[in-house]
Image (cartoon, rainbow, N blue to C red; front, side):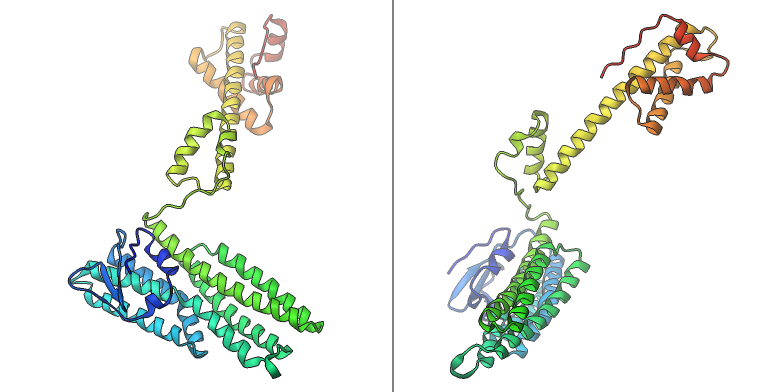
Length: 372
């Protein structure tokens, strides 16, 4: 069986049947990309990845899942023990080959990470054993069965929260995993309420659902670590999840720029689009305010130049002087239009005490029109 994994080797491998990954594996011949597994071979194309990065990935996933593996092994899940052992063998082999066969060592480190990533799947056999060992006579579900599942869920959640804490400490996004944990908490709480009310069957159903949601949370956490690790290295780029036609509803001048940024992976969600639109609105508002500042400053400078020949400032210096006053008044008062002009004149009067600004403006034939 030949499978070529391009780019997302880790994520794709997580979806492969567990049996194809937990058997002893050896590199065939001199190739550093052909891996022999059981009765077939797996051709692996590892993305451009340094040995150090591959090793970091392997250790990260191992640390993320090791406690879960140990819990599953303590519950007599043989496949968990085999998978952890094989993963450790690949990791040890990678360390042995790092100096003389770096490419091969990189492949082994990635394959080790893949093995470690299978830990959440082995939590399902744990649940099966818990249920089987707590059934009543004739295989009936009893209150003891529900309590046994709830107890296993509590243990699993404790391990899961430790893994989430570790992932957070490494800078990984745990939002999706936490959402599944919340769903598991709700199902578990409902199971406890139903059991207390004497509804064993419904309580059992919700208890099992809660357990499975914790398993799902762990699986999502592992896949998130793989995906973010590769994305942070620039090996894969997350695609934007945007409703069809959304960009076409935006202002024309924004469409081409946003489409280009989506292609580059800079805009990835509706939240990003909203942020870009908000920035555009803010930019336009700032441009409008800037035009108003310049207009008011020009009016003041032109009027002053006509009203008084004794000013020490002329031309550009006079305009800059008025502009600074207008901008300062606007920042302090949020005034606009004619109100901004009036307040700016009052400010100007305080700076030019030798002139009666208001009187000179009122006694002169000066028509003022502010454009918006």
